[in-house]
Length: 522
Image (cartoon, rainbow, N blue to C red; front, side, top):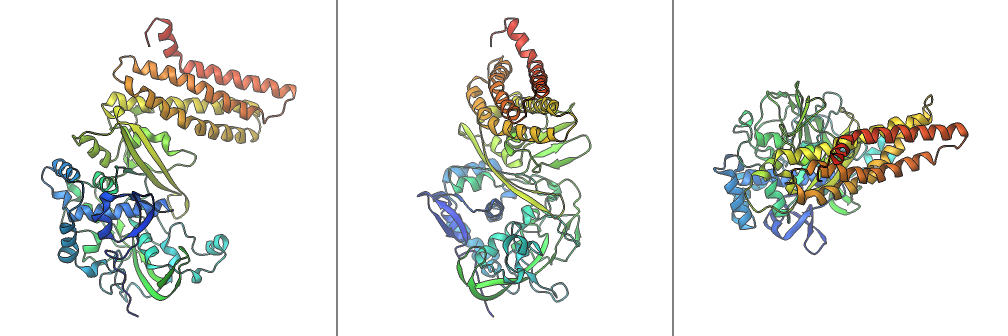
């Protein structure tokens, strides 16, 4: 059967307009009207970021951003224009790439896929493998109570899912390597006042690393065959941002109701060719432009989601810190914020008072198990990004808070020292601690942002945070202790837990209290 779905023209990208309603647009309309749109929206954070990544890399290719002379002036001029040039966008489709390259079902160059090859595509699989958050194998029956073969996806859903492969594919067993980023990192998206500004502010301008320069284009312009399991030790920057970790070809079939969206479609995809793609063995450290880095004396790695660690607790590394701003754990660990935020810092334009971002991630076991997706908006006053001492101050406050939470756990262990029962009290109390602490922490940053040039700002900030933390800790302790039984022995243990905690709490802030007693004006 002959089927076509042109992602350039057909509506499939969900966007929020200025009226607050959601509509769907093709790539062209999305780019050309981006100045009139608020954002990309999707119930799945993985799809939402994947769509942003697609449009951002598309713009990098349209504007040849990696080879731009005076890249910062170029992006400033574009922001000043306030919209993308429709003629330039149309020329990209009609002349530089060609319409067939954007057809999801093209026989020769299917969009974000590989054409059929008897050598590699003898076997087909259920389309359930296309979605990270859609269980496949026996999990389909366990979670969804439908058979794998009954799943059917519309071209719209398939196109969205394909956009998640580069940022979120992890090891899949049987020779299926992860994408170029390895374990999916936390991705930080700089948010503008419109979709146009967001796309501009996350576009990489100028070649960030000469090791990844070269002529190999984005995947939808590439002539390179995806050979299953082929190891690659080189890649261009654009190729890396559209990396193909899987060899995929969608097989269209008769229409019906899409299992995922519950919308009727004249074409549905039930089966597909799906196998290993390229394996990245690059020479040199590849760092995604939207990912923050952890730097040690031994290696450099991108920050990933961690179990029981809320995203906002890493606001310093994710949004602020440069490698030389702050060192933690005996100076063995340093941080570098994402390239897109380093670019944003260098834009010599009138910046808003508040840096607004969204953070996306997928927590895995570093292999083929998906645990949860993560998403959180993070905002911080731009005043903290003025210099290293101010950026480091935010991290110092957070690491002090981490220590307070650790002391809370040590104190609560006194409740049942010889029993695993204490662990449940500790986990509950510490989760409550962080839930309560989030809002006061950002309120503190906001309140202190106008005093950052004061010579005593660290003392001011720590003393104010001590007051707020006292109330937070008292509430968390009370909630944990009231669940404990009240025999005489238990009451003694509760008293001991309080004594241990508050003693350590006071010692942690002792240096600031001593300064106060010596007459330092704060």
